[in-house]
Amino acid sequence: MRKIKSKIIIEVVANLCAKANFEFPEDVLGSIQKNIAFETGLAKSILEEINENADIAKTEQIPLCQDTGVPNFFVKFGKDVSVEDGDIYDSINKGVSLGYGDNYLRKSIVYDPIERKSAEDGMPANVYVDIVSGDEIEITFLPKGGGSENASALKMLIPSVGWNGVKEFVLKSVDDKGRNACPPLVVGVGIGGDFASIGLVAKKAILRKIGSNHQIAFYKEKELELLNEINKLDIGPMGIGGKTTALAVFIEVRPTHIASLPVAVNIQCHSCRRKTIII
Amino acid sequence: MKINLKKIILYSKILKAGQRVLFSGTIYTARDVAHERIVSILADSGKLPFDLNGSAIYYCGPTPAKPGEIIGACGPTTSSRMDIFTPKLLKEGVKVLIGKGNRSNDVVDSVKNNGAIYFVATGGVGALISKTVQKADLIAFKDLGPEAIYKLEVKDMSLIVAIDSHGNNIFKK
Image (cartoon, rainbow over all chains, first blue to last red; front, side, top):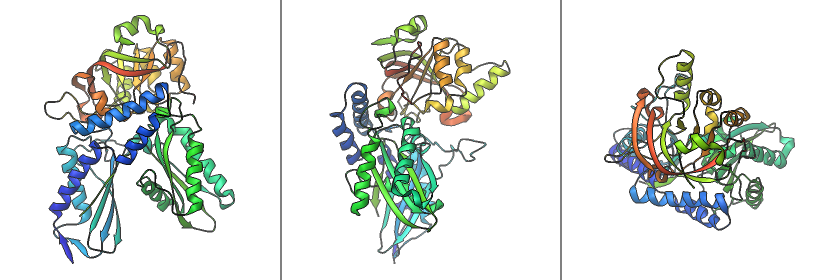
């Protein structure tokens, strides 16, 4: 059994918080840059601002966006490794408090959803752990902004509506709230599973690299179909019209009940910040 | 086109929806809870944190400033969450609203009726926008953390006129 000190995890996570908030992933930046050529007028100028912002944030090591988000962590925890003097949840939370504090990231959490008192003294993270084979810990960090999360939706469809029902719901969700979610978007779609699980499946879909395709030919085709349809909605960069409404649509599917067809749409803004590290 | 707050107060009708401007002047940050408190102070005829008449409000909660810096990343947040409060503030003389995304029909009407302007800034470019801030002072509601009210002096902040004082709106939905 490999043993890792919690101090190592805390330091790695603190650094991950900073880097992910300061440096745009290459696939996302590449997609923004590619789309500049296809736009004109205001839409083009907005994509250019996004490109320029990425440069300033990286050079000066300041946040790309003031919404440094809800810190989401997706952990693949090897069964042959253990945290020597703590546990993975506690180590990640300590790393987040350190990383957000030391790097002047905004603490955007309130402890109580109704009372809404600012959680300035702490920074509770969402930590999702999967046990996998091996003796490594893979940690992926996704700081998720509130504006795009608010545009997300989940619906329990009935099986008879099939793919067309799913498509209609995805397009309606983007058309209803996509303008306020800082487009161009990355759209994560979860189909199947159940009420609790499919939201997380849609969220994990956002972690896929732009340019990657679904392994199943049917869903690969459906991802492109949805992307084309979304980009015909004329929402455009920041919702003021244009061709670039989404950079990518990622579908993930799960087995489901014979009576059910759950669909979750997790909307991600253009500031699709995510970073993975393996310890 | 370069424009400042004084000029907008005098000649708001020269601005047209879809126009890009470089805006300079004093703006006050206010998000959800700050709006709620301002409206409640108005109802009780209490003392407001700043003079609303002729003011500019920016829907923004910046990241903390690094040592030696004026402000952290400071892009706009979604404006529509403030829609229920906005007509009341416009009635009190607020002239400029800055945020991102579309607004309710009530807000569109209220902007028109009060000769105000709603600008959008590009969301998610908080590092770029921070370069236009020349001064930042926390003036009220410190207990709200990132939602406190900051008085900002901005120079050449790049904005798009989204709703003009004729009631034209760049958002189609």
